[in-house]
Image 1: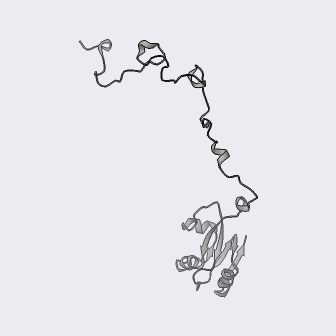
Image 2 (image 1 turned 60 degrees about the vertical axis):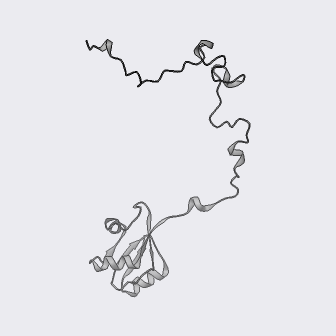
Image 3 (image 1 turned 180 degrees about the vertical axis):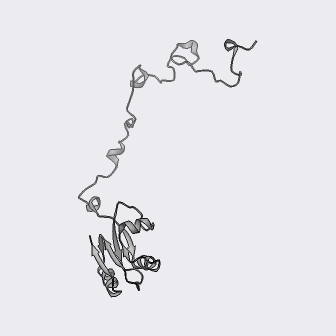
Length: 151
């Protein structure tokens, strides 16, 4: 009869548990795979994961940072080129700001400010409201009778 107290796993499906530290009758003999003497052979013996057993530790082998770097404080921008403005102008957009650029999918990260660069050509009149722009980009927009307003 098949009942809960008669259920057993298949003979091959379970590996027999290795009993350690249970005397010589366990088959692992005296030291129970712990080695001979020392900190880790005792009960409660433990060393932290970063301990390297006498080898010079990693944090002492690595070179130390020296000096100061302004890289942490560098301002990052999304880059928009004049060619991108020309594409938007060809679709009938005459006013460009951060929200419109985000809506059109031209910003890589919406949290960053936007900078206009002078790569490409601008032939259409476009009014631009952005965080930053290069001098040549401002000249190119004004040459096409547009305006650049920096916020």
